[in-house]
Image (cartoon, rainbow, N blue to C red):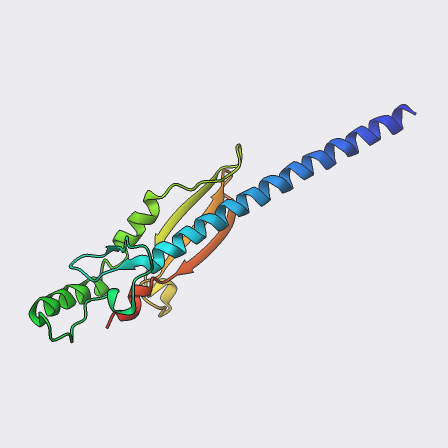
Length: 164
């Protein structure tokens, strides 16, 4: 009788512990999903229409002509040509700097207590590992407190489509 009681107590404790771990994992994944949604929103709103890149703070997403300077617009063509030259230079180097800063400035919210989730943004080289990969990529890693990878995505901001 004592052995059966001890055995059932051990099984109950183990089942409870596994249930808590599953709940923590689900909450971590929910926090990562919410954070990814925020990052994808920033990824779409990131523009370089002016001399420097930044986030479009309007109510909606930028229109097609709002991502990069319109070089061919006859109105004020000299100023737009200068902005386009600056945009071309950013395409060569530094296009993602402000986007990374904007993502890093956002707090990761919603992680369960005692189950921290950490986000890291990595700007990727187009020739990483000897491969020729699309330029202007960045990778986002989410890890738990024990540095176990929870999720990883690679993104290219919409504005990169206008790079020559």
